[in-house]
Length: 621
Image 1 (cartoon, rainbow, N blue to C red):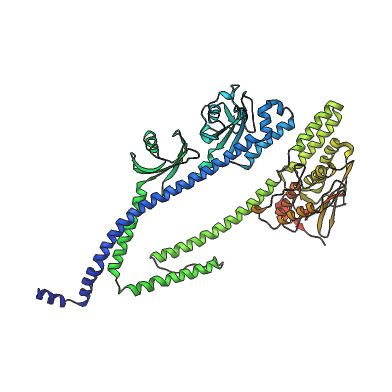
Image 2: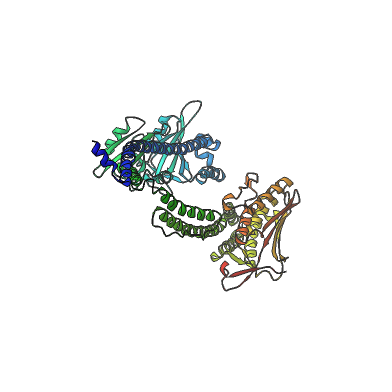
């Protein structure tokens, strides 16, 4: 033994260090690595399941919140006085057009505010129904439908009945049964407890698909939703076909849990959670290989770590520290310059290790960021153009209805002469309003358009409405944004002339002043008080200081109608087209009337076509 010891002592220091390193470093490191591998594997599996269950729980809460919102809407609809009147009196309560229109607008407001609602239907106990977007396919009584009986059985309790099946109801959009989910609530008489009718609400499955489609479980996992009858509500198109009977049997064991199943291709991990509110079960499905791959990756990292520790040791620590920290510092310096706004900086290292790849990824990221910034800028410009076109479409339909009613009344009363004049004025109104898709039109076309509008209104209001148009010589060939006068004149009629006693006057003037085209619309109507005027001015001023997502919502109303929407429309269009220097200003006094002034750039024709691309704007001193 002594001789063996002497032989050990005779070894070189290098070999001794290697032996000591193997005994002191490698063996403990190997044991620790094995323990860490076993521990991390268990932790990863538990943590993965826990995180997925939490994710499923969050998704289930989101579905519950969506369902609770629809529940509140159904309750709000059932408690509405007009709905109650309709359920009590039937079609007699909506015999008048204004009553039917008011009830239609009430239901339509929900589908407008909540895009997830496909349609709403109110069904009376005698089979009569009213809806904004839904109708019966045949003459069969809707009270014989299964969903009507389910609503009655729930006795006023909100109930989700899943996808409709072979029902006698459809929508104007003609959604497929697989594209919607139905919700019902019976409306009962609080005194007798009898069912007066049923509220049927169809929800677009697209809302649920968007909510669940973006959720990823691992690399290839996904979510599905089944109802209380274990019928499939939602499943992604690329989802794996599962054995329904086996899934149903396992889901019925508890409200929350997990299990594994084998398919012909691979082993799947199933995690699920049932909602007590909707009685729907959210199920997460992901391959076991995703978890196993993560464990393999961890083991690989541990082996690499052990290999590095064994091979490099203490003697290589300084070199590694220097060789690794230096390029990282360079990369951090480059990142700080990017934070300061310099997007042209690049990592200049030529290394091929992890740091070099990170630097290359950093360079690629900066290149992609610049492309994305340019793309975002283009998209914002396109969005602003789309908003501009969208704003031009928000003209209330009641003017068209009133005009057509007036034409019909004149035709019956006086024959065809006055009706012909009305039709001619209305034809000009629509022809000039379309303007062949052009955004800018000559001033004389805009004046002809508003004159046609006033002719129609004059025929309707007779001596109640008088008007005059005063246009400065030489400016009728200038170009203006189309349809900027009609909203202002409409406001002057409905909120000024209409509310004053006796006849009223509207004056339209246009002139060039201080480098601007000034157009004024003045009336001697009811006017507005100082507080209302200040509020309106504040809202118009804030439009110039806000983004399109932050534009304020006007709440100035009079007799249930918005006073400021037409002004906001014109203000937005002018500022979106030409900037904050242009827009409208308002002056008003109670009992004296209101004057709205448009500040428009002076635009002359540059090419043959009157489009934005070939027009130039200038200021003349």
